[in-house]
Figure 1 (cartoon, rainbow, N blue to C red):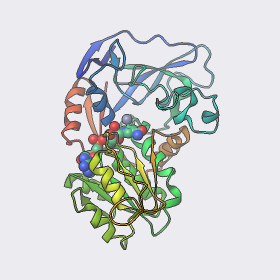
Figure 2 (tube, rainbow, N blue to C red; figure 1 turned 90 degrees about the vertical axis):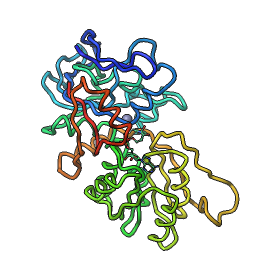
Figure 3 (tube, rainbow, N blue to C red; figure 1 turned 60 degrees about the vertical axis):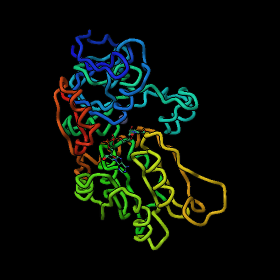
Figure 4 (cartoon, protein in one colour; figure 1 turned 120 degrees about the vertical axis):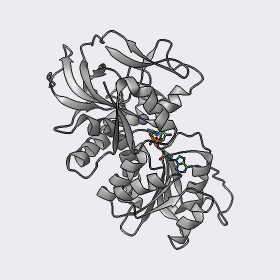
Length: 346
Ligand code: NAD
Ligand code: ZN
């Protein structure tokens, strides 16, 4: 089969590789579509290799069951679904409490095994997955379904964890209206009564945010925090979802979150927010605000995301590419030219 593989730091190659041989608890999925996440760009730019042998990228996967492992019950060839990306143990205290994204087996700072970031991923014709990670999608189109596996899962989880802050009359700021952010705006619109202020460096992305349900778009610049305070009677936003995570967006989040507000870090841009223990006052960190570094989501978050999409309340804006054009799609993403999510079709 053909697979898009990372063969060295910064090197991506479309290679002929054997179709995986599945174990007794696995499924073989024929890939229908695989989304491209900005995290794939972070991985491509790592100065070292995640794995010694070539690694097939792709952690947003939808497809059809092609073969079923000997010990798997309840799944049959031909079922359509997507892949929950936290391949967690399923048995630890966190997993059984529904916190599979922070599975104990992963240790303190690692994440549970994730296809395309350790085990081979879905930018290929076939992928081997644990049967426990398969989530049915009904009649959903594969191009729509694949991005739910991360862009929706991760956004849903960050929003779910801040739901108490999102009362009617509240304001939420979404920084970065890319693959995750444009889905996040829709999840806020569909599941809360909050007013969404979207922030991006690109006017086109702000137009997309408006299509997704944002009340207003603000260009990311030095005056953005002041503009948010102006719109919130000087208090700031009840929740700030940062889908970029650089120094400048971290500063914006700290300067625009309300007292008792929720600052959620999702973007992995390496930014360091300045949170000081000094007295509040002046610009900076207000009393009572909380920060959470949010990783992926729970299986329940994913099932809820699929339900939103199936009910028509969440539509991913998709740009389709052939698997062979994966590198070009990643380059377009890097240049900020993708509207919504780029999705590969093998
Ligand atoms: P993307 O490239 O599709 O979107 C990024 C958006 O941010 C673009 O619209 C871009 O114009 C905008 N942007 C860039 N700089 C900005 C700035 N200074 N101010 C405002 N907007 C700015 O990326 P994506 O796939 O949506 O991923 C977003 C981030 O989330 C990445 O860092 C990715 O690695 C990370 N991520 C984290 C998790 C997690 O579990 N925490 C999961 C998936 C992705
Ligand atoms: Zn991702």
